[in-house]
Image 1 (cartoon, rainbow, N blue to C red):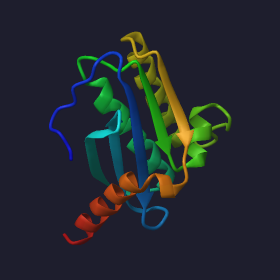
Image 2: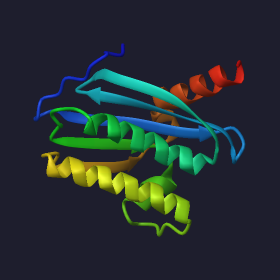
Image 3: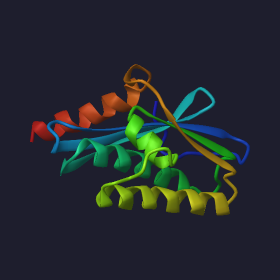
Length: 152
């Protein structure tokens, strides 16, 4: 299912499904994301974060996914990001003010990635809220990372 290399064409439209979660808030936290081109999953990843909050984990997940895409030699024309955190989506879209400084820092890092990718030809990056039921693959990766860490 997961390929070791993402090969994109400039005309490709990429979808990212990302999720972050913490068991306890704060508590052990992890990220997961899935990159889809067309209908094919071309990359997925999960990472254990240590102790942090759910909101930080959500920001970390989308940052990791966008960083992966930004590291590629050729960027897609558009990226649609799907998150099950309405708060993070609305903050990134500017619909909600970011009141906590540590979350504002994460948002700034996301905006920097967007700026870099737009300068390299990625014309459009959107953030969209989806219910958890439509974000199952990313959610499963978060739980896999948390479960693996709990066994250590």
